[in-house]
Image (cartoon, rainbow, N blue to C red):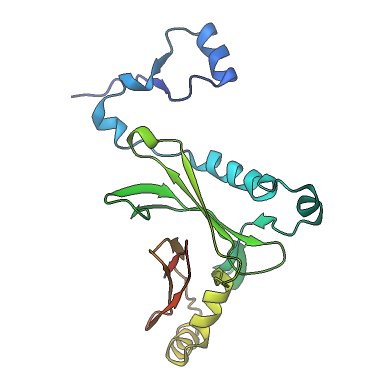
Amino acid sequence: MPTTGTTTFYVFDNQDPILAAYRRIFPSLFRDASAMPAGLRKHVRYPELLLQLQAQVYGLYHMTNPEVFYNGKTCGTWPLKFGTDADGQQTTQEMQPNFVLMKLPGEAQRRVCGDPAFTPANRNNLIGWIAARSDGENYGKAIVYDFPKTKLVDGPLQIEARIDQNAQISGQLTLWNQQGSHVLRGALLVIPSARRCCMPSRSTCRPIAVPCRSCAWWC
């Protein structure tokens, strides 16, 4: 079927006041989400920019104790990871959310989820993770996983350091970063995995027991 270039706007949040104002101004421009064809509905995902903004706000304002909030003890920030600048040199960058197809703990089917993670201010270990859902009736919902305070879960920079400490990998990176060539590191993903935290270093994977909600690192 040839395309006509017609744009259709579907509304998923009927409580949004700004959107409600637009609908009163342009009543024929918007349609309810229930009117979206099933083939298109399968491809709808949580807005990436909205997820980033919500995660940033939540990282600071999730605290309910005024004293804890004032001291910033559990303030969550974007974790840092190794990246490459415009000149091909290794640098540290903020780790942005990725969208992955995965099974959430306690569920049988795979879902498309956004996965922003948090580290404490001025520290590199992980303290939390958010799953922003895009599936069916759960579209727009977010699940927060708080990591145990009694167990240290390595963050991206700490995982990158473990990779660099592997003699075999370190040797290969040194070899490849010569004569104008540069190694581009792949993205790290934080994946919940039952009651273990798995941190692969390319050649090995050493599970570490965690008593409750946890994650797995994949390179």
